[in-house]
Image 1: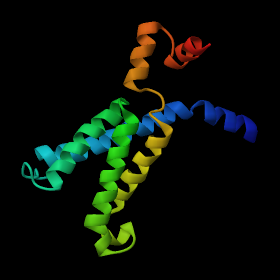
Image 2 (image 1 turned 120 degrees about the horizontal axis):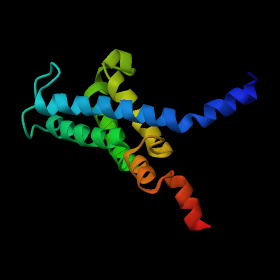
Image 3 (image 1 turned 180 degrees about the vertical axis):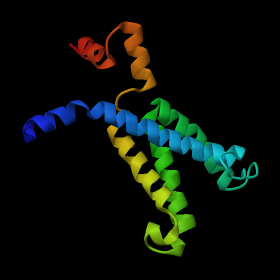
Image 4 (image 1 turned 30 degrees about the vertical axis):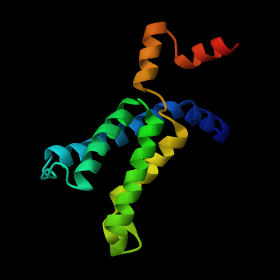
Length: 149
């Protein structure tokens, strides 16, 4: 397979892989929020109203679910990226410059992963895209081009 054909093959699958990335990132973020708010998955729940941890857990739970489903992805990802930057700089940065030194690897990766989704959008397999396809029998992108023509 030539480089050009490989690039074409990879590019054709980009929406699917981006959608899978979004779903995994959203699921991981949702579990972080659920663990903080409800005390599941081996973590003790943060007391209700405890600043900033309980509120961050609620945001993680809600925004993670939105990102997982591909609903309001850019807005939820923007808020998620910001809260992870806040967590990194307020809770981790004081213990060292690099994430491996300060225990902030997860917030750093979440922050940059969500920032990628802010600019790229939900990719494939989003709930609105799947519902629109099911209702009208074809992808939403095709309907949009028909309307604008």
